[in-house]
Length: 124
Image (tube, rainbow, N blue to C red; front, top):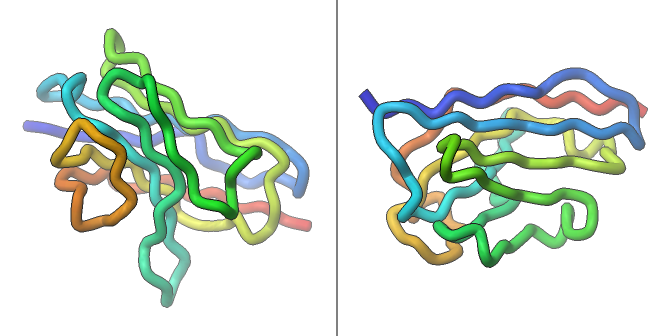
């Protein structure tokens, strides 16, 4: 059974850092791009960051550019999201996902396997 499990969320103060991890099991995803999304109650899930299958290219939402870094370790079948200079508006449930393609994707429609999410709460 294919599964994604996120970890690393928590409650922090504005300006702090967190590192999210997403471990995949059941099969390898080294040929798929992967992404991070986030969602707050009452709003659509929004794109945060994506990384190509090789890890050579990344893309970010404007709201996190320069503060968040996505990376992956294909040997460990894991993708990471390093979040620095956190702001209260970063508060959300963060989800990792496996894309249908090897290229960068920012639409939820292009992702087919999702984790259960991890809560990130940033207080001012």
